[in-house]
Image (cartoon, rainbow, N blue to C red; front, top):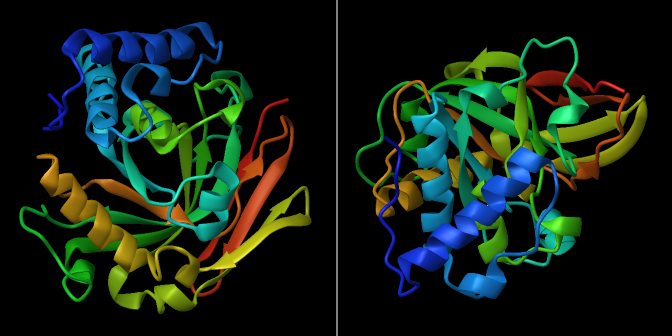
Length: 269
């Protein structure tokens, strides 16, 4: 069972009401009001408890935790959403669209897409790590897409809203893969993303908390603080390298990353 250990003064019935609001939006495909009206804008521990409660329910229904995603690592994305620090969410097995001929647009409410460096872990992270330690925990490095989504109407989110909403997770696609030992300087990666061959986003590895390695360290240590360490085999989406872009049904998106390769996602019309 997946759960986080979070200290909050918000009463359990309020946590449950907020979790139910987000879960109902997911099932009905109808965006809901922000949950900050229930827990406030600043109680991040309460928000992680809401996230955990909904993940526990999905795991109990048969879904499987396969990794984590880091959100809000890029200054451009923080500016887009009006927040000022990273967060993390949980990846479930049914979010993985790698190898699919099309990404089913009907699964999503208000999708946006961002290009990221992804990792798979070679071993458990059971104690705090440093940037020097991080590569030793990684098996492979990927060019990837995260397809973010929000259950909150019109993306009207505070940090607490997006944390509660599983860090606005949606789906993901892993692209070209290289062995960690062959990875380039991840801070120096140049990224360009196109929509139907027109460039719509660009950035670099340094835009992701200074480097995707820094993002992995932040995630590993923050997850440990909440009692949910990362495990061997986990997929980690390390955060956006440039601005996220609204998804157009029927469009094709490709991101190229210097030294890593590319990733492509075709969305159903």
